[in-house]
Image (tube, rainbow, N blue to C red):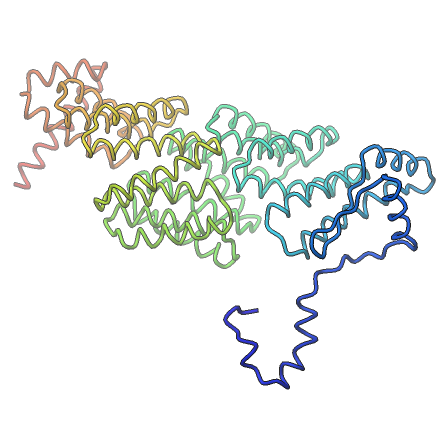
Length: 499
């Protein structure tokens, strides 16, 4: 009922007509089961004999059966003919599933009730039904970032599946996603390949497409954008062929991310819109939120900060409603980046810290590194150069451990900027910018121009001779040093022409 509705303002005769209907709406849901005759008397007798405990929580009554009582009853039921114990477990599972569907409760209670249903279904030998309930519980656990509990349930489920079960591939695939979210890219690749091998053997096209897609996400995280695009396209080809709308939306989204990372913002916007159109048509909130986030990043890089803030907030509202911890951390981080660009450094620090708190709690290594980097920007601006260096190094250590090439380039570049701000040696700053530039040229990143500009300034300031010697040492490769020199010459010629 709309809380703004004032029942007292309704005429009395209408209130009388509404009263029985409102009473029915307010009545707690009733389980669709009839208790066996005499159950109340039997429960009272068991309570009197201390075989169980009955408590009352308001209008709701709770019954606690002592473990030894339950064990004795289960053993007795197992000895009776007609699979009475299995039927009892199925009835208990149906009750817990009914609670999820009908009882007014929060998501944590839903997960608890699904796990109770899972236990009873497994005891009844209904492995397939238990698997479906487990999948529902794991989906919510993953959204919360409860990856340890999710992984434990998956391993338990895999151990119960018969050899060669077609359901193995999906569970192994999810273990890969958990490993990737934790930053263990080698383990993620191993699990994705295991899942893919099973799906290819079974001819499961949708499963194969899912594995190709995740292998693309992994390649993207490592900075191999060509391989990422290739895997996304392989996935998209299958999704389009089988009519998998949700899969198509995910592929368009990721192809948009690759275009964004390469600096092709028009293509990125086109792919994001294709993905958004499908997700909105499907009513997929979990798919829509990341697109709003990416549209915010696109607006930010184009300098439209108001639109960026609007998109980030739209994404955050959805992530908070879903309880998506990793998504919330990403939104807080980008809101921090936006606040930093607008000069509101206190707000930027607050948002970066919110992102860091979540990322550390759920074990998101990449998110943790981005937060360290953001906090480093704040303290650098405030003149605390030692603390800035410490935060950048913490971020860099994680990026290097993950093999995140783009993240490493960002850290190298900022360490170069830091050397300039604190009046450090030109050779140190040049070395950091060369390391960042080498990666960004390999990735095809538009941010390579930033490093070229810094290096051009240093060449002008130190003189061509000294700069050439520093560059040769920093590049550690004559070919790279020669390529950078050619790019700097080209940049100088362009600047002269523009002037």
